[in-house]
Length: 193
Image (tube, rainbow, N blue to C red; front, side, top):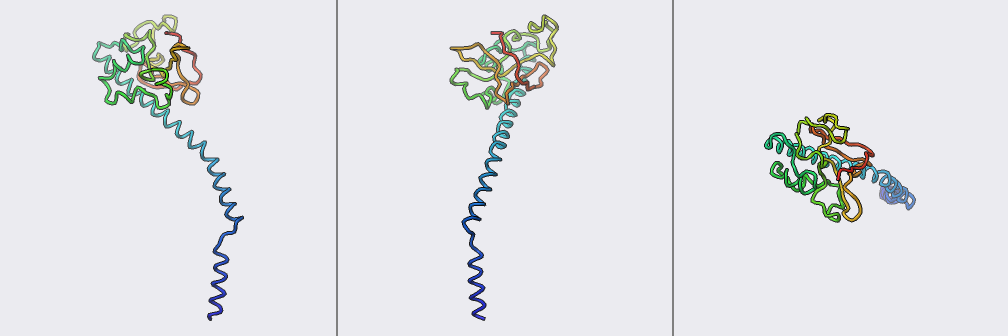
């Protein structure tokens, strides 16, 4: 009986250990899985930042609508600048600092911008109901579902004018006058300033 127990114990010790080859195979499989999953995690992280940006647009849109209600239906007069839209809409939003900054706007402080979003200069101080001729559409009446109320922009003061950005998957996001937000890929440059 003792002899059988000793043989079983000897066999159990040998089979319980992993060989070097088995350990290397396990490590290789883990490395391959992480190499496959890291880009997926990065994409998910980017989609999360883009969703946060759209949420910012929604809150800015509500703040602009509230501003317009208090000012006889007129959009903020200083919305064409980064700090102007913040100053005009701050009383109408509960989280003033965070909603005016895109989570993907890493160069905002380098470019000395107060925020990430602004209004087209030709649209500031106009009726929120778009009952005016659109200067960007040959003077045709503006359409609330197609006219940009705010967009993501950046400006390097030493080099270029204000332009829309392509921060989110090669495109940019817009807030339109009717309050909905939209992502567009490869839109043309802004030349209103």
